[in-house]
Length: 340
Image 1 (tube, helix red, strand yellow):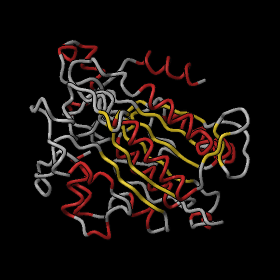
Image 2 (cartoon, one colour):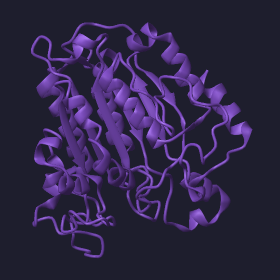
Image 3 (cartoon, one colour):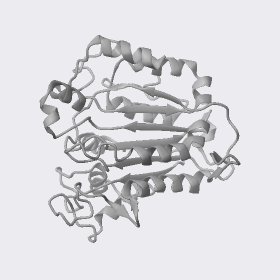
Image 4 (cartoon, one colour):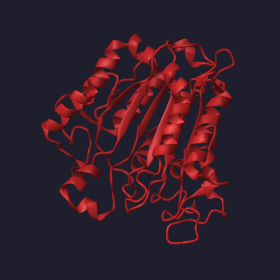
């Protein structure tokens, strides 16, 4: 989120440098619809632009394909009806949706560093890595939005992928394969009329199916939004207001990793019923970057791999009052039943 970026830049490196310090390849791909003329200003619309203006080049990710959105040929939205990036029109690149091309980039960069995913005799994708048993474990959490860019709508999604090593030594390249950490921000369903909320469903499902061998073997995936439905009449009602304050959050870990660390599995399942914030996600990524060591928790955040506090107030979690949501206990009971 933009506010988190503003807070992080003066006080330390962004999260990708924690991975780069271990020899990992890094990339940042963020969909930007309003050009790059505001790079360097405090009111800039995207974290990528803010970081680019405030950090030296060697502290930015190794790959920065987000810069394609700064090209003058891409006329900024959102009031130009002829703009390619106008949210009221379908955005296509060579006949394919923009989100398809961005997801394909993620697949290609993992293929480049980790080796390609091959098709098995049954037509299902398989990685060239060692065979594993079981699929990824999927955990969801009750996410609460922190101060950030509130102009987005449902469908804004960030995917974070990082290869997991079973011990410290596996963080470096092994057998010609290098670990990868990347951040992807999609805006394909970013509009205020609720007509494109399902725009990513088919494309994201296809990506996850193709990526499944990596998720099974050695890759962690965070799929999240910065908030729920936004900017429409629906938010004037209690249910819409609640949805606005409840962004999606899914975390996938390889089954063999979870099986090898039952305490982490237990903490993740219990944390589904607790208040989780973007600060905790940042702490979890720091934990992955330093694995198996765990950085010291801060006042407002802790890795999701350990138990959070049961009765955690919005104030303690640094959630502004306007974003604080106190769901009824029945919601948690239903979530716990679904998790089982």
